[in-house]
Length: 98
Image (cartoon, rainbow, N blue to C red):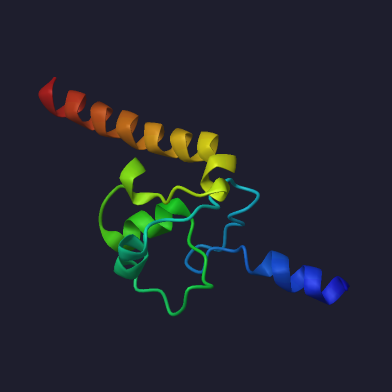
């Protein structure tokens, strides 16, 4: 039983940076076409939202996320991630204008 639990937790690690996607709130589901852009080796791999964005070459948007209970459970974390990206973009724009 302990081995199963260890393997289960290991599967939550981002394959690119190693962050625990469950504990960090980066546990989510995106639309198939977005996941395909990330070119993962298989559907069981996990990517945190930052590494997924890096792989697809753009920031995530709400439309990228599937409508499933899992995403509803982590909605606050997803929203915080998206808000942070929006704020960072605004700060870069302000810095370039000012």
